Length: 324
Ligand code: CP
Image 1 (tube, rainbow, N blue to C red):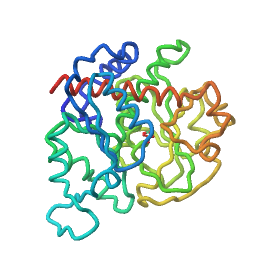
Image 2: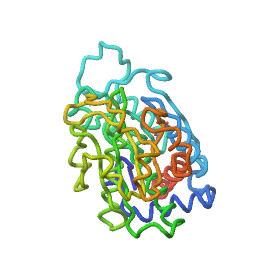
Image 3: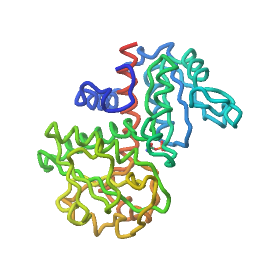
Image 4: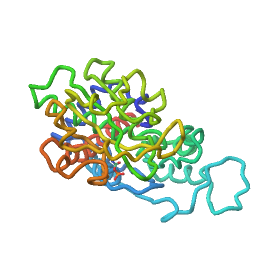
């Protein structure tokens, strides 16, 4: 693996999931791989889990870690080519990425969608500019359109539950549900989860269903062939895993079309499932998107999911280090 920008960079998903589970069972087995190697974690946006879990995973592999918040710790970075730099951005990505690439063997980047210009966001300019000019492997720590480290942790979490619960069907039903929110949020987590679950469904591992109000359709490249059910209650029937996430509209780009509170997940919703598990990438606004009762119930996997971020990052970094 040279870069980890999306599922397309994964050659064997089953093996990568198993590598994450192996890392969880034996975190320091590959410590020699990262000796005298450095990872730079570059954040254009806030983070709790991604920052700490990726740092921990790199340390488990023996790596040195440097972290930088762009615009706070560093100069603001200009991404456009050929522009007159007379604005508030003091440094161009050409120099910044090239310099960081001299200090680091691997660079992780977090850069969210701005939700102003769909074409610009979906071009993934920040990731591609870093990949072009840094000349070292790039890891996506959540980009404008994807959050693959989260999706890998979600796959690891589902696989763990599958192995532990023999009563689950051979192909558990996984439902991605839109949740209400007053702020426009990117589609990255929903996109990525759909992309990875569609791959799991195609491999015969799960059944995958998406539910959201009309107007919240994800881009076709991410929704794939998954059935979209606009009736949330119907979608929840018999589900083994409920994955909740808010996203703003893709078609009416960045708009909040509804805040319908009936889409927030409560125990009443969960009672329609097959004693299903509740998943969310976090952070989550309690009682706006999902009730206290669900989050605090044994059905909630949110803490285990977040814990598994360490092992998803470790599996990816291990594969990249092996190829250096
Ligand atoms: N799920 C996730 O990426 O969390 P952070 O935004 O806190 O990193």
